[in-house]
Length: 214
Image (cartoon, rainbow, N blue to C red; front, top):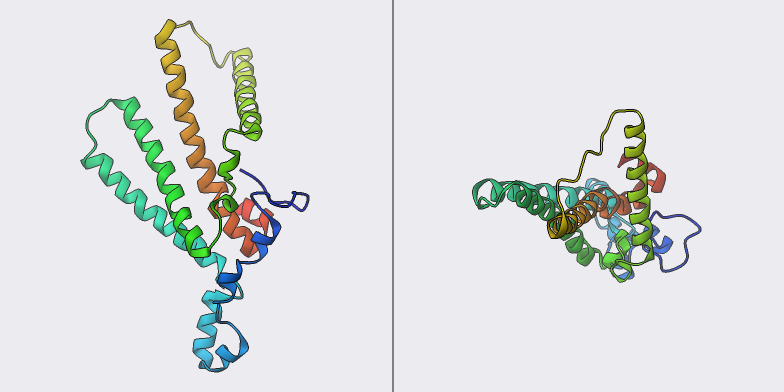
């Protein structure tokens, strides 16, 4: 997930222009020019200013719509797994739940990208860079940091690696399973906290405030 900063090159996932202004199609339809407001009553003008800014619907309301949609989809997902999911064993259930969470985190953002007339890449997940060098840098950092943590715990006698319980093809199969599992977990957790949410809040309160809030 990218973090916006003033040093990023043009065309990055968090392009500065996309953070501070909406596409022309939104701004042109915002309807907040002086002539339009003059035709409204004072109360209507105040209400309109509350919900609509120079770039269309204010970021805080877009943020609220995204979270509300996510919560509704999460409720439906919970009902599906509780009432309709077959007995496939705990591991496959956990994998399906995480995949479902990743999907319902991304789907509302896809819908909002159509409403806002933005590319989905703007939300910190440039699909053209999927599995690019930054992905592998992140993989190395993640694997390295957790390895250092486990070694430190082992050195403090708080953790023991134990012995090998799996061998051969079975060990490889579980390695692939858990690799895919935690990739899906990462997509869900990173996107829900550092994807559409932080992008939209950044438009309202700035990046560092949005990062602290998230």
